Length: 256
Image (cartoon, rainbow, N blue to C red; front, side, top):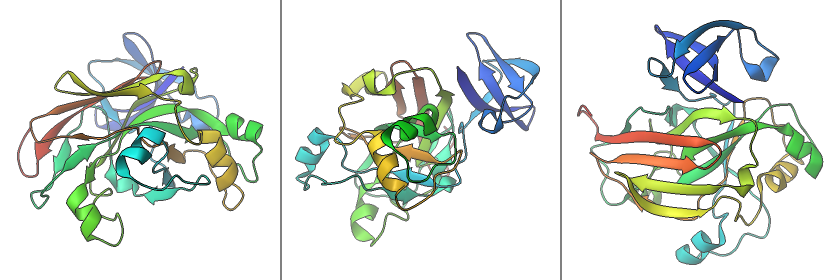
């Protein structure tokens, strides 16, 4: 099943996505089993981030090839960082490059786990059961800012730096898929999605030793490689079995 948040006539609505249409729902599937209250076509909906997370967790250096390329030490246990939900934007919306950004402006294609139940001190099986579904993220980074600042506050958390969507897929073996990054239709990166140092459930087990996860929290799982992007580009992140997240890149103050 595919669930999305869309804007229809200026109103934010949850929907169940079909081949040609979206069934509009009375509420969030994270809260129960909502009723169908209407319908709209795929072509008329404005795609929003499929969830606005109460807490936004992100993994770094989780793919061996990325670790080797960066010359970073291999993590000995699953640890997470945090991102800001103001950075989220939906499928089809622009990634806006601030005019002050110099140097490398990069995309990273990531699998995202969406938590569907409250969980603390999870076993590995409970961690699996806590995942409502999967979506796609594009971890955009301004590398100069990343090296200049003590934290990632602007390099990874500026507005529009975290496209996510287009929907949540609940019926897929996410770790058996392939992740592909394309810029202007050309493949720039492709890797086995599940080729991780620690899988999402390892992270959930470790995280919930110390904190409570809640429905709607998200966990971005890192990427094997990165790719430079520029205004005028269109960036597509595809994870087989889930879908394609596509966003144009534009310079701040310029129309796409």
